[in-house]
Image (cartoon, rainbow, N blue to C red; front, top):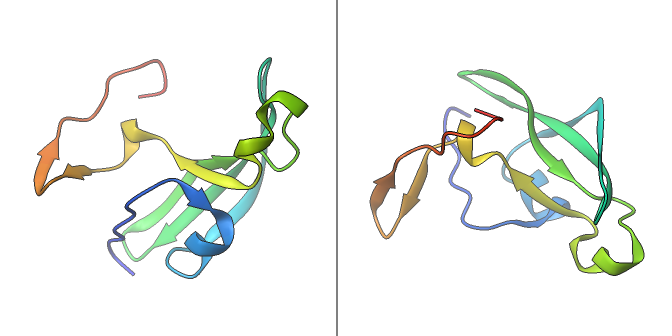
Length: 93
């Protein structure tokens, strides 16, 4: 697989069918959501380490994000309504 179109943040099970999410040992803490678990994405073009993350056991006030997967906008190509958006420049770039 050389390119993947992902149209939204969503449940990990939905992404697993389209793009392989390989768990890594990386964990970070958010005071509002809890511990984030990270995933490497492997495509024909290479492995993209810690490109996606999920809150498997979020804090009580963030229960709505449980099991959803998010991707770093700084490391993927974003296309909105057919137009490529510039990559964000942040501390995670």
